[in-house]
Length: 172
Length: 192
Image (cartoon, rainbow over all chains, first blue to last red):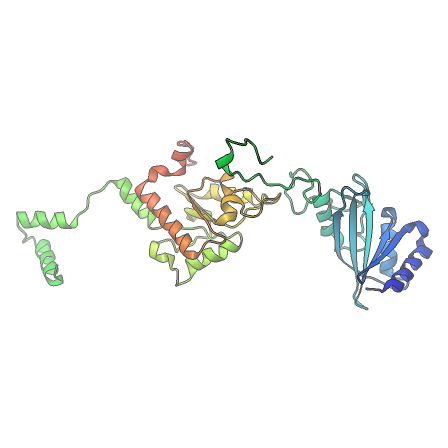
């Protein structure tokens, strides 16, 4: 992980290259460096970080989603970048609202293919330009986005029928 | 009876030297009469062919029941695990069933030849156990007719063997409790 100064240097570099609006902010907490970017600029930012101005992160270890409901913008998409050369990691994140799309990074980082599909599967965030935007874990005819926070806990209520006649449908 | 007397009487019988009363007694002692159905059920119960099909951690316990000499299920005639559903007549649902796996299991079950039996092994297969979530089928009896439920998380090998014994007992003593009778589904066999 870059330290707080290194993170600011990276942010400054990205801002200088792509304009001020590309980077929304930087967060440094508990040794964990996060670069928050604008959704529209994520391809440019990751492309820049990959080919490397001051740092080059040539692998994406994980793309994952997060639901901050009831906050808005609701979803967070997180990219964990790794530099194999310097063994350095950077966390890039962006926030989108429900129904907004995110540009795909599959052509930059081919290993993001299945992970973007998983984010789509669990949260319903569509990655625009992805070559194969289908569900990956759940059945293809499944309805709903199961990892959203307003998705019902699932399954079905466990019935203890001994008091069912006293309190009908108590589990609801 | 002493073995030598036994052998001598058998020789007498084979030579045709046995008289009427002796012959009658000899036959009464040694011949059982039963119905063909009962004999067939007795044979079925003592030669179960489980399908080699493991789903989750319960499968390890299932393998230890079938494969290990300590809990040798060959004592009950159910040790010949078949790889093909066409050759098996018992399936143990060993573990939690995800909703993506359920159609696959149903298809394998449909490919098995009748008569066939299902053991639901463990809490997850019987009622989804602790997995009350979007990914797991809440009890395997939602899509399969189950004959024996074995509780436990996972069940001890002894418990699973007890379940197999219960199934055997069911097969040879009360075959009318098969799932077709329970679900009133006579006449739905694939091959008449």
